Length: 271
Ligand SMILES: NC(=O)c1ccc[n+]([C@@H]2O[C@H](COP(=O)([O-])OP(=O)(O)OC[C@H]3O[C@@H](n4cnc5c(N)ncnc54)[C@H](OP(=O)(O)O)[C@@H]3O)[C@@H](O)[C@H]2O)c1
Picture (tube, helix red, strand yellow):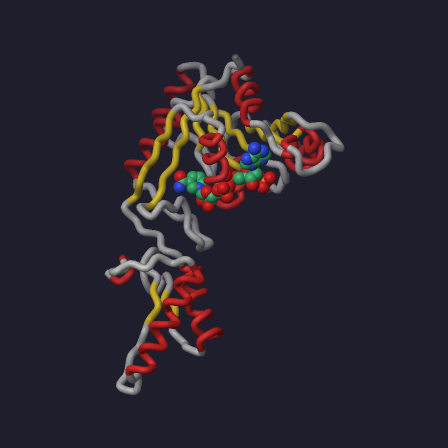
């Protein structure tokens, strides 16, 4: 049996199952107490892995924040923070991302073997960064399994480098792969008391009502209302007689179905 590290998946999600929202800003799902808990888990790990998507979207440093914990690691003969690990096929990573530039320690980038030279040319020059080719070969046809990095091969390589405990901090794609392949030993799931909603669908609903039904209803999104409480503002007047109200109800029903929005008796967003 191939040796592999103990794998702990760490994720925070909202009550409606989102790990991020559709805005440009990073969605904060942790409070200070949870960040401190995550810091303790980081400090107890030999390596932290995130997908390239998380580096592009969140630009995380993935370092141990507490000085006490960093000193504890140093006293135990370890680097102040665990090694940082990512996976990519595209190599679409910015060498100035905090993953590469913040703190010290090893940064390991796993790519399909056929992509190694190309990705090394892009980010391999940064001190402490090693691009590791896994499986596949230059010239392999695209679309095959060798197009991706095999997680068992990554885990075996990490084990050979002395990683006994690996923390996987996202994002959704990578977490799903570890779960689907049965390679997770522990799942730390934090559910934040927050409802994300969907600002993009709110805008789409408004657009569809105008384009397909000739009805203008204003979408109200953040920052006018809090994130997770996006809504359509319906402004009835004495001129809106029964026929128009029926027409609106029918149009709303069609748009709701088109966008796959839930039809609930009472919307959380209306609270
Ligand atoms: N709430 C939380 O706890 C939490 C934590 C972390 C992240 N997030 C959120 O998660 C989102 C990012 O998730 P995501 O699913 O888009 O991205 P992701 O899982 O971070 O990364 C996916 C990318 O990683 C690379 N990759 C994954 N598996 C691979 C494999 N087997 N072989 C080679 N490359 C592989 C590919 O990169 P290339 O495209 O470069 O080929 C792929 O596009 C962000 O919105 C972030 O905010 C939430």
